[in-house]
Length: 202
Image (cartoon, rainbow, N blue to C red; front, side, top):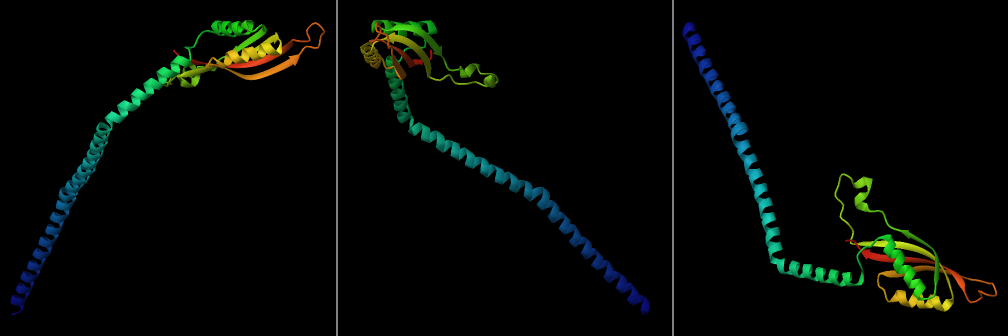
């Protein structure tokens, strides 16, 4: 009887071991299926959904641009018309010699005698060493500053101011009048003036 009991005990333990092995095998299979089957599929699904949302956003933006195309076209046409109007009032940028000639002729026309003239141009941003490795948009306008010393009477200065007011691209920003005290020059004085001339870049 003892031997039979030992045999049954060994057989029962064998079945339990088989059950444990089977359960462990199932857990391994479920883990492998989850790790290498479900997770990759879920990741691809998530990426696909995000990509679809990006496509939908791009599609909505394109459709909005198409819907606003007429408004954009009207804005562009208005901007071009405005630019054409501006170009009628402001000349293209010219060399310093021509700037000097324009201002000198204005002075001589109003009986003012120029004695000194200095022209200052802003630095060209496109030629700046900081912008060697990048493209820089050329500004639409260039403002040239000119300082002049002239001699003349007060009425001549008023005439010059009237002439400058008729030219939209020339502005007198500073003026200093010093009257001469000599007997022969009591009606004349020395005038230091600063002009700003606005030109369109070619």
